[in-house]
Length: 304
Image 1: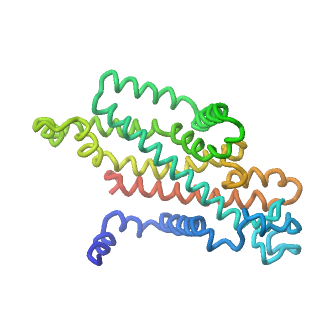
Image 2 (image 1 turned 90 degrees about the vertical axis):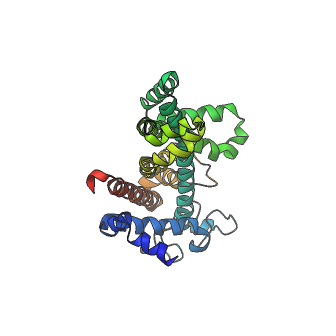
């Protein structure tokens, strides 16, 4: 174990991280937000979604440092008396879970289609890439809105809250798979002409085994970098959909939902209800983006 840690400490990737102050700061900020989000049950001073603990008389209280604020609610409360700091922690968890799940699903779809497209070639390649080109001509948020709208129209209204999370994850994933498919296809076109692939063909290894056992590990590098950057985009897309009112249900709000709720009170003087969730969203996306930029540069051999 000690030898493994020493090897990791002395690796080129970790050396690059230790000498990148921006990456270190982004890692610390992201780590703190992850701990707060996934440990919200222990870190949050209140459970904002437990109706028995919500006090309506404490509605619209300002942050603790304001004259009429109270130390019980560090960042104030919303219109229902929920602790805003606790709501942000729980909302960050929802945003992260949806972002991670949609990125993983998008990676799965894009990697499989990209491998098939690059390895098989011919009409299959042309068909998959033309579908990807058509989809890339539309904004991702428009694709996600279309998929979400079709899914909601296909089920009864009383089931909308039940299917909200899987539909949102699927919509964001289906809007982002072409980037992975194009990246994997380009790398597969190079790898399939390598000697190890030709040797596998000669000894009779099947094409699916060659694609997923031999080619796939050698094309994952660019995909991991793309996934890091795409995570920030997925979180923004989820926040946008929730802000528009077609995202997660109000019973389990994300950061986008909290911003939408606070936007109704922004011009009446209760600025904290929307400013603090917005700042949390900016910090989350910015830290992920900065880590993605560092990882892209660290794994680029031309810059090393």
